[in-house]
Length: 58
Image (cartoon, rainbow, N blue to C red; front, side, top):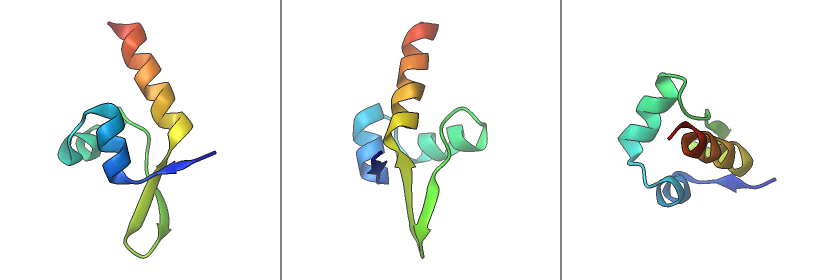
């Protein structure tokens, strides 16, 4: 299991910061997890699954 920081998620998905957080609020993107004070990350496998779902929906 690997955690991705926001910058890595943005590069991997080609989404902007605001798009990621908007989709999270709409339950359309994996939720981030807190790593401590002001530090969040995403589980890489969850982001990969989201990307696979996008491919299947096209």
